[in-house]
Length: 459
Image (tube, rainbow, N blue to C red; front, side):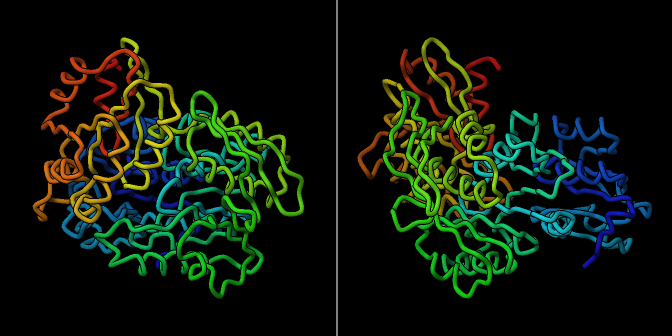
């Protein structure tokens, strides 16, 4: 593997430089004096920012973008061998790293690299951790998979020993990391276009946990079904959190305010209890905050700063994000694209004031829709009204004979009315004609379904 010397800046080319993680890595290297160039399919605020910092950005991907001046090419799992820039790299003999490999090498530059993993909740928990570290003036370097309002972006470059990043299991990418502290939020079936079954996924998380050094720590959700396998034969310290008294950190006396924000008493071993008030809704965010508090105590950060940061944290973009109101109709957007995430979001919405709950869902990828068809149908039943948009293909092509109509039929088998429209315009027109004052509309999915709510609001 190519080893990057951060004291000897070179010319690095990013294929897909506009991605949320790739753009952050490019920005970090720019700050270290590297020459950065790269390509993406379209202009965005992330590519505009990189251009303003001195990066050379190309739109579209062609062979001519890569020449012998490039010393290293970085690409993601979404790039295939038939990509023209990948072909040019191979023909010129230019060394390469995956996004995960580069991120892993970057982590080695910090004394306390922290990696947040899990099937769900990585971006929200990484953001919570970021806010807690910022509240205690630790000057961390942050790499977040979403836009955090307090840093006006997804990346922050600090000068302290702390480095915080998300750690994704897809293609086993987090096995290229070098964390000292690891968080595992949950482990469920997902990315079944890569993993064979849950046992392969559990094995991947076990290997991730095994990366932690003897003087490191694993913070793990005690509700994970296969936690004993994941924790087996580890050399690091282990901190368990959850909702039962046998955990090192657990939530007691749980309640919710008028907007569904969690309030609870935190019980810890060897420390006095304290009252925690959150600025984000749902039981799942109480769980995320427990992991964050465990990390805060591990780092010996002031408790009052952690409490203040958790109460002030209102979420990241596309995580139960309030978009606005139209004629007394509240519009929320959420990134949920897995049945467990849908259930968590709709459960949180139940505590939010509303008359009827509409879920406008855009399934994400054909393989995920087929793998969890029955689970998607069951999870969506929590909404009063269900509208489906066409599947967002992402990196896939339709070879499975699956569509949103298939999901619609599955929902109707369960006795629930479900509507399907082929275009966003049709969805928007239907909502304008049929939603009423006091309704709560949630656009949901990992694709571009957010446009429906934004179009309604004229954003």
